Length: 188
Image (cartoon, rainbow, N blue to C red; front, side, top):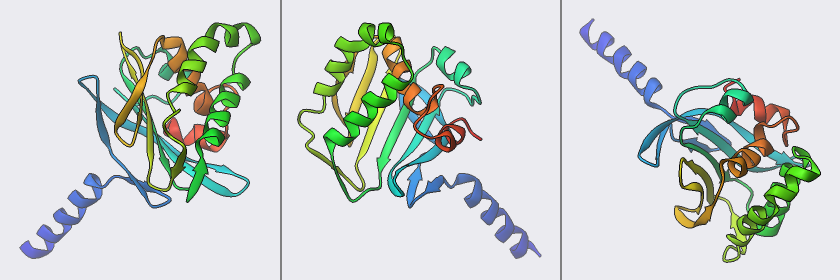
């Protein structure tokens, strides 16, 4: 009886400790950004023409279920893109980011973001291609801007919380790249 109880407890503890897995990517349940512990809010898979490109995980200080709540949250945040496609030109990813931001912003808003969007694009000058296993992370660090990392190496920063919200709009904005992905990132 004791053995069976112990076995059940071990199974339950391993279930609760396991990370979410999508497309073979295990997402951390918690990460640290700007000295703040963040929890996995949700995750989703980005596909283009039936080709799975990346698994995204959204990390927040506390669980949120709406775009408005995520955007209004002044705490640190992270969206991490875990590449699952075998090989892709970095330019392909950057065009997708730009298009996703443009879909969610007016011409006037884009004009206000343009210099910082150009800075963001240039951060990837040293990254010629992305491949399966690569991780691109965008961290909002209050007071320090958006930190961009590639496989754990910082590429640089972009100023302004509005820029980070513009990035998030790609995945959870009014016109996201995928409604299923938005639902997943928002814990649905």
